[in-house]
Image (cartoon, rainbow, N blue to C red; front, side, top):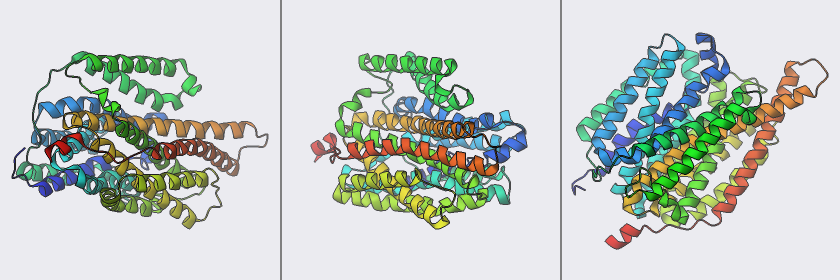
Length: 476
C-alpha cells in the first residue's frame, strides 16, 4: 500500500457515495402505496421494488470478494457509482412499472457491490485499535441512511411526488463520482484469483432463491407451505450446501467459508443478522401500524420515526469510540437487554399508545441497534487475518439483504396470519375498528417471535470477547 495515502479524503469519498446508495434501500418503503395507484399494480407486485433490490444485492455480494481482488479501488468505486447513477436516471424517467423496476434493479447492482468495496478498503487502511471509531464514522452512513429513508421519503412524496425520490439523488451521485475521480486512491493489492464459474452459479441460485423464496411467501395462500415456495427454498439450500462444499475444496475459493472457524467472527455475524432482521422488519411493520390503527399520514409517520433514525446514525461514531476504549461486551450486552425490553413493549402495543411513548421506544430500539450492530460487526472482522478481509466482508454483507428479506417476510407473514385468524373468528361484520384490532393482534404475534430472537442475541452476546487481529500483532 502506498505510504502517502490520504486516509481522511478516502473516507470522505466513501461516505458521500455510500450515503446516497444505501439511502435507496428504504427510500421507497412509504411511497409503495402511491406507486400502486400510479402504475395500477397490486401490493405483491409493487413490493418487488423492495424485494428485488434486496435480491440483486444478495446475489452480487458473494461475487464482490472476487471483483475486489480483480479490480483496483478506484475502478470498483467509480464503476459501481456509475452503474448506480444509470439505474437512478432510468427510475426517475420511468413511464411504466417494468421500467421503474429495471432502474431499481440496476441501482441495486451498484449498492450491492459498493459496501464490500468500502469495508474491505477500510480494513486495509486502519489498524484494529482505531477501527471502532472509523467503522463507527462510516456506520453513521450505513445506519443513518436506511433509517432516514422512510422519513425523507414521506416528506418528498407528499411535497414533490415519487419521481423526486430519484431525481434528488442524481446530483449527489454525480458529485460523488467527480470527487472520487479527483481524490480517491487505490488501497490493497490486485491479485486476480482464478474465476470459478460453477461457484458463481451455485451462489446465485442459492442466495437468490432464498431471498426470493422468503420474500414471495406472502403471495401464496399457503405461505411457506406452498409447493412453489418449498421447491424454491429446497433447491436454494441444496445449491448453498454444494457451494460451501466446493469452496472448501478450491485453492482459491470464490467465498472462503473458513472465516467461520474464527469464533468471534461467527458470534459477531450472528448478532449482526438478528439485529438486521429486527431493524428491517420494524422499518416495514411500524410505518404500516402508524398509518393503519394509529391513523397517521405517510409524512407524519415518517417524522415520528425521525428522532430514532437521527440518534441511530449520530451515536454510531460514539459507539465506535467506546468500542475502541472498552471492547465489545460493555456495549453489546446492554444493547441486547434494551432490545429485549423494546420487543416486550411492541408485543403489547395498542392503538391507545401515546405518540411520545411510541417515539421514545423507537429511539431506544435504534440506540440498541447502534450499540450492537457496529461493535459486533467490527469485532467480527478484527478477528480475521488480512487475506480473509475480502471474504469476511463479502459474507457479512451478503447476509444483510438475506437477513432483511428473511426478517420482513417472517414478520409480515406472522402479522398477516395473526390478523387473518382474528378476523375469521369474528361473527360480527368487519368494520374498520375490527380491522385495526386484528392488525394489532398480528403485530403482537410478530413481536413475540422477535422477542425470542432478541433473547437469543442476548445469550450470544454473553460469549463475545474482544478479538485479536493476527496480522497486525505480527507487524508490531
